[in-house]
Every structure is written in structure tokens, then in C-alpha cells.
Amino acid sequence: MRAGALGNSGLALAVLSGATFGVTGSFASSLIDAGWTPGAAVLARVVIAAVLLTVPALVQLRSRRVSIRAGRTVVLYGVFAVAVAQLCYFNAVSHLSVAVALLLEYSGILLVVAWGWVRHGHRPRGLTLIGGAAALGGLALVLHIAGSSHHVDLVGVLWGLGAAVGLAVYFVVASLTDDVLPPLALAWGGLAVGAAVLGIAAATGVVAMRVTTGSVTLLDRQVSWLVPVLGLAVVAGVVAYLAGITAARMLGAKLASFAGLTEVLFAVFFAWLLLDQRLDGVQLAGGVLVITGIALVRLDEMREPTKRSATESRVVALQERV
Image (tube, rainbow, N blue to C red; front, side, top):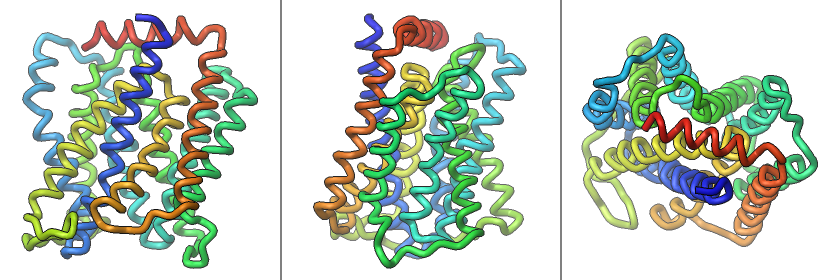
């Protein structure tokens, strides 16, 4: 398969990951409105997703020797990409508006670009810089960041920047192809480690835990609390992480991180569809800017002379490990 087609397949998986991660807010909001704490919703999502992946992951690893390096990668992914990113984000939301917290978290794509520059000498070129500015500007419009209802404080900003680091680690670690586990095994290991960290945080009182078993509201209907919980675990957990890891290995950390901005667009769309939250012209214009920014970064990647061989190397390595 040609590099261009591989890149397009990677983008399709990245969009799938964004869509499935994007439904998180709607499912979580329905639980929170019913009396769940955010930490309880996150822990349920991570634990159930890890349990669902246990058998297939163990089957896949049955005849495979896990190296120390691969083990370190799993721990790094689970601690930072799964646990720290979510703990920091929910703490940021307790001090900031959701829009400001999200914008800070997704500034992590700038950290991914900076990492590629410092670690691999991939200095960002003009199209990437323009695309990045367009994407972040569009994100600000989607989130109505200029609205008078947003507030900022230093503690919240620090938590938000911590979430940005977690997001950057997610894309950087997911894109690794040297001596790493297959996507399914990495997702399972990361979720298991993340569940352990979040469980410790809950046990020590760092994260508040409260659940209810009453009905929740989705699509203006009363449904069982199991519907959003399983939606979080299966759709926003298993599918989202598997698609995201595979996409990052095909695209590389930089392009995958920009494509990950589609999560916010899908989150706004699903909030409108499932929770009847408004969607206006400013948000639609912001969505166009985000997509334009992703397209510019993709175009910059395609113009890079060595990109074809780099993409092929990633996919060959990925196929050998699946």
C-alpha cells in the first residue's frame, strides 16, 4: 500500500478516535447530572475498558516476550496518558471553565511539535505553524473562549498545563514503533496501569468518588445508568484508545495530535445531539478553521521529502507487531 493511502487510513482512524473520544463528555455529563462525580465516571470507564481488553490482550501476548523497554512504555503511557491527563483535566475544570481547561489541555499539540524539534530535529515549517495557529484559533471559537463566562486562576492553569503534558505523552508514546507492544496490548496495559493509579487516587481522597444507580437522561429519554457507563468503557475507552494508538503509529505524533482536535468538534456535536446543547454559527466557523489547520499540517507532512519512507517504516513495523 502506498504511503499516501496509508496516511489517509491513519487519518480515518484518527477521526474515528476523535469521534469516539468526543462522546465522552456527553456520556459523562449524563452521569454527573444524575449524581456521579467526574472521578467515578472516569474510573468506571478505565476499569471496565481494561477488563474487556484483558483476554484478547493476554492471548496476543501469549507467545510474545515483553521487553523491559516495552514494559516502561506501558507504565509511561498508563501513568501520564491515561491517569495524569484525566486527573489534571478534572482538577483544572474545578478551577476553570470547561472551555479554558480544554484549550489548555489541547495546547499539548504544541508540546508534541516542540518534542519533535528538540528530540528529532524536525523544525516546524511554515504550513505547520499556520495550520497550528488556525487549528487553535478554531478551537477557541468552538469553545467560545472569548465569552464573558470564562474565568482563569493560576492553580487551574497549572492543572490545565499538566493535562497538556499528559495529552502530549499520549501522542508521543502511541506513535512509537520500535520495540513496543501491539496497539491492543499497549491499550490494555496502559488502561490497567491508569486504573491502578486512579484507584489509588480515589482511595487516598485525591479524587472524589460517588455513584448513583438511578436513571440518566440521553436524547431526552430516561435510560439506565449502565448505558452511559458502557458507552464510556466500550466506545470512549476500548475503541477510542485502539484507534488512537494505531492512527498515531501510522501518522506520527505531530499529525496525529492535530487530528486529535477533532475530538472537541465531535464533543460539541454529540452534546448537541444527545444533550440538546446549542450549536451556533461561531462554533461551526471554528470547526472549519480546525479542519483547515489539520489539512495544512497534513499537506506539510506530504511535502516532506523523507515522509514517504518514514510512514512506510511505521506501518511495516506496526504490521509486524499486530
